[in-house]
Amino acid sequence: MSANGKTFVVLMGAPGAGKGTQARLLEKKLGLPQVATGDLFRANLKNETELGRLAKSYMDRGELVPDSVTVKMVRERLTCDDCQNGALLDGFPRNPIQAEALNELLAELGGRIKVVPYIKVDEEVLIERLINRARIDGRADDNEETIRNRMRVYHEQTTRLFDYYRDRHLLVEVDGDRPIEEIHQELVSIIEKA
Ligand code: ADP
Image (cartoon, rainbow, N blue to C red; front, side, top):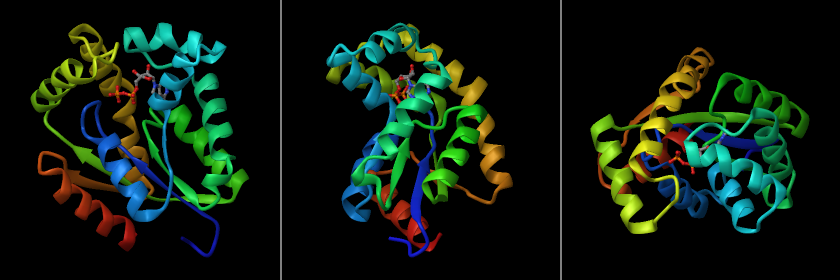
């Protein structure tokens, strides 16, 4: 993709904003793998690993899994062969400590963040989408109480990253309350231009 090292795209947005959907579409289009920390934790849960057992208690409450554990898991994932050109990060970083850890990791791996698209959606739309997703996929953490807690954690911790990436001229806002394909096209053009 890029001649000088690996390219990383950090997708930001609240729970339910459509990061996963868009990351999967971009994965095909750009040939960069989607690295979604939520999916990695769920895979560990399913395989009943020690990491999965540890993560479960936090996920069930809608809290962040401790940074040290999360960063270690991301490091392992990003050193896999399929990330040789970079990756689309979905759900990571989620707070300033993780953002700093990502910078260190990218310095070490020889990569940089190309752009940070922020998929923006109103809170009422988000809650409605998450409650619907709970009905369809039956994700254990998609019940109303956990959803509200995930939103609270998002506002308290993750939204601080907007200024962090805005200061670094990486943040680009995208209206996420539109058809999936339209958002996809805009993301492709933002990433290609960046
Ligand atoms: P959503 O964004 O809809 O809340 P995810 O699948 O991204 O769903 O995350 C589900 C849960 O996994 C989170 O509530 C949290 O417990 C855990 N998790 C995911 N990413 C991180 C992260 N970067 N740091 C800590 N915990 C995380």
